[in-house]
Length: 388
Image (cartoon, rainbow, N blue to C red; front, side):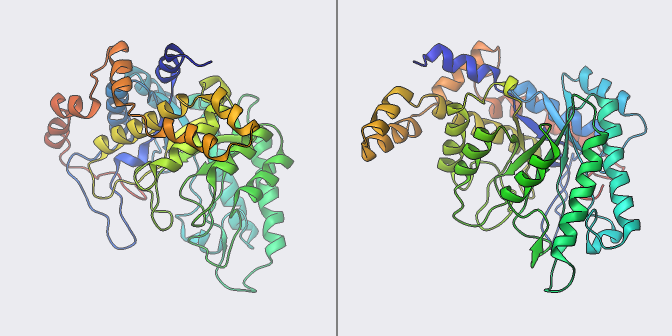
């Protein structure tokens, strides 16, 4: 039986990875809104990420996006991060923001362009080697917009060839994480549109190839927790990209649209004893803060994940199993709902105090003066953002 001490220990040990690009300017197809104090360099992004960890205590890792976070010396960048109390995490490849990739990257019909894309994936592995990163995350915008535009099966062959070459290039302690997305920017076919496609490719590659679930990358009404449970059962769930959606891939703050869904996902994680860092599942935020301030948005997102996790940890597993075995439909549902409706904020405040943190991370950050300082100091230069 899970005790409150077990719950507290699990919450203290929780680890959430934040994305470097969340601190840059972002927006929609119509407008990118600049904010004062936005980072101009990868180092300044890491400094902002360090603030999120300082006030939450559970976000010690920041992922990079290449070439957005390209530097001359990645070992020095990792050393700088370590000085800030932060570790470099997942390296994200970018094969979707070059004119050459209009018809695809690794699935492009032009072998020259496929080679260019593959060379970039190899470059990202070099970055992993220099920073000590474990994970390479791949998302491909590749697909088609019109029937007959390209051979659907041939594109899968090209994809498999590129994935195999990339997988072979990895070191023995490195992983390939394959992300899927239902649509956009390709609207007729997307080459990795769903978890089944990603799973099939990863299964063929080997045990160090795993699937990424981005919570915004599904059709409306998709039961994401079923995908979580299935991939956990198969040992093929490598990571999450947490965000929230109302209509499509909105990249809003995790838990904003449907906190109950986030709870249901975390229940499957807890059910499989996969919350522990040793499980190998990377819990990462993937969000674009278009109108809200960047650092508070990341802090709030971390807190949202913590709240969903705490509720999932409070599910009475024995009572749930008994109700399920007895065919007690409403009783089983009631066990889950009791946990979901529990106000876990007092518990999390106590856990933060036990960790030597302020019980209210957002208020503590607001009092710190960091936001005012970076607005005053980060004058001149080019703010980071999409494509920078």
